[in-house]
Image 1 (cartoon, rainbow, N blue to C red):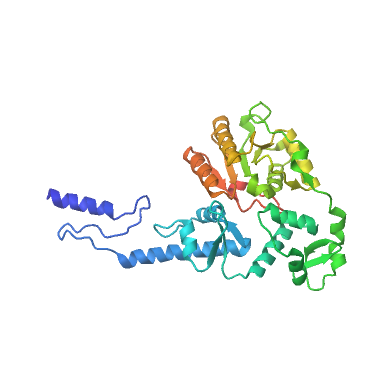
Image 2 (image 1 turned 30 degrees about the horizontal axis):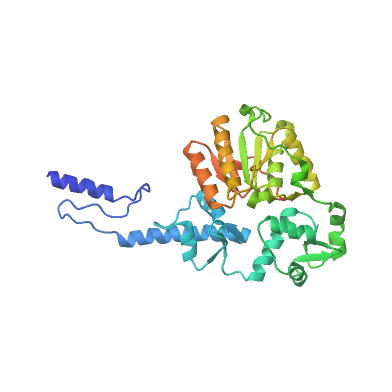
Length: 361
């Protein structure tokens, strides 16, 4: 009897996958001493998980065109979609014919395999222009593309050969909203607002965090951590989000981290907003004393720990980085310490009105 009870107990425990609570097998039969595998049910469950994950990623890429593994992983988590047992996101994407993996090992990118190279580039450039919300010079467009870690070969040729999508005239580029758009007329309003970009380091923003210049800890409701070595283009969106209720009523601390050689440009209007947030203590750009391999990542990790120890437990964090190792380490660490954290929120994009609540969007 003791052996039968022990056999049944072990069989019951074996019926559940670790930490998932999903039944994978029938428990031991106390009389027969056999384990009956539910092969068909397990296969069906894995197929459902695979289909759900594929559908979720496909929906994301239809909008984004291409994104990092970190962004894709956060999308799956936010939708409550799991992967088949035993598969990482990288191995799952690599096993699906619908997707293509590219990029460095530390910054893997996912795209739809069915898109041709030209179609993917057109979609990407159109999305950049849509995010900017205005016509820009070809020079600024190239810069905005490089800000996103991309390079479009033959950009001028691509723009002119897809006149159904783009309007090019007098050195300006915009999106064609209808087939009847007259190029000079469609871009005329953009000529008046195309002003020189401002280099970030010329703004001499404050980089100090521990000198008492930050707002009182009790007034900081959330912190945006920006890996500017790969997400510099989101600094403008972060500043707009932080100042959505005005600088005087700000409750969002924006902290950017980058190498000393990184000197992105921002538009003049946003430069004024960034300076105002910095002067009020709500924005900091922190760099290592000397550039070495992963120096900015180590600096970021140090100050994240300092912020965690300094700010109230209710203060929320958002991580913006395409470095999957840095992003996942910080997210797991903060969540393990009881913090509410979001990673690469899709609602935070250039040219899009900031959400009222980043964590609820």
